[in-house]
Image 1: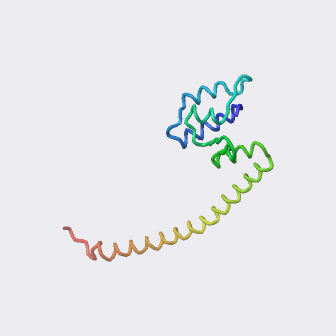
Image 2: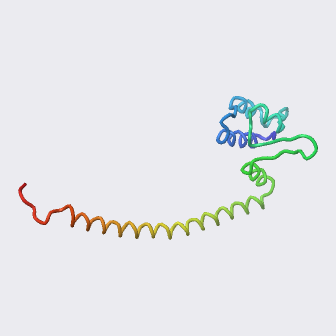
Length: 135
C-alpha cells in the first residue's frame, strides 16, 4: 500500500464507484506515496478517504478484503502468469462475443431489408394515388 501505483489504482477505483470518496485526502496520499517515510495501511486508507473498495477487519477471522476489480489487479501484479491468463481469457471472451453478435447483426440486417420492402409496398398501395391531377 506504499506504492504510488497502488494508491492511484485505489483512488481511481473509488472515484468511479464511491460517491462519498474524499478526493482531497486521496491527493495528499498520492503526493506522499513512494517516499520512504510514507506508510499506508488499509485501515488508514478506509478511515481517511471513506473507501468502500477495501474492507479491513481486525481480530480472529479478520483480514483485509478487496473488491474483485482491485483483487484481480493486485493478483496480476503478484503473478505475471496470472496476468497473462487474464489477458488470454479476456481476448477469448471478446472473440466469442463478436462471433455471437455477427449472427445477430446479419439477422437484424435481413429483417430491416424485409421491413423496408413491406413499408415501401404499403406506401405505394395506400398513400400514392393511381393518377396524379393538378389538384
